Image (cartoon, rainbow, N blue to C red; front, side, top):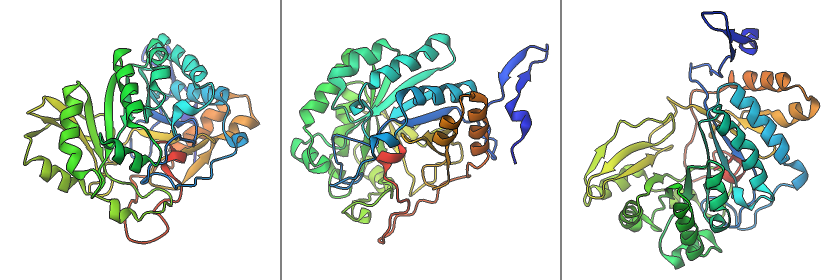
Length: 350
């Protein structure tokens, strides 16, 4: 049942309206972070993420850039302070910089603390300078290997040199880059220590991620899955890893690699549930709001958005959805079909 008080402006101790109440879930977690998928399309086909022959959504099903801007404004008005633009590959969406230009006004006003994105890096040489000029201060780049042949094998079509040039362009534009690498058994496991040395040598943090059981692919993910507990044990034969107290409300747990001086994160959805401090929700490019990456429950905000021009109605739908945010996900990786969650990560937003 929706609490009407959450829809009305709050009043400060001196009687001055303080704006709408923030979004609080049933477990008293404040929702301050929204990840927005602007497209399910990607110019790569990473083997652990997508099927070789993906069936992408019809363009008519996608929210327009103006609709995405309106929805983001509603979330920002309710206390969201960080927006991450994702995909698929967000920079392949036509006219995507129009959305970044619109959203940057919230940075200028101080209503938004951070506007960022996750990208595969293929389009960064084209867009890095403008992204930086619009207030994007840091980005995540998904990169699982520094071997050109292995990169083409993982992505099924990618050119590593293009991505490395994109990373260089982002750094030259003044953006801080973090490398996200999915740990893949028998694929890049032996390369992880050298990737850390490379990233830290360029002043870039790095995060390791376990394979997630999202969407049907040709391969069996149990053959890809490398527990990060195992990866960490291997790393400790070469590096000294000092736990850090850093907490962002997100899934990563961090260490400092003493030999490089850099920071390394571990995202372990399968071997260690990371949900207790979750501060985020995810909006798909079709307007479905998922309160949890690993649950199927969602709210159809596109229908509400297109049925009314009143943002208060849209805000009410958002508040109601947050009351259904679960305590945690149900990810399990097993040698069986279908996948634990049928939608692909490219649909939900990476």
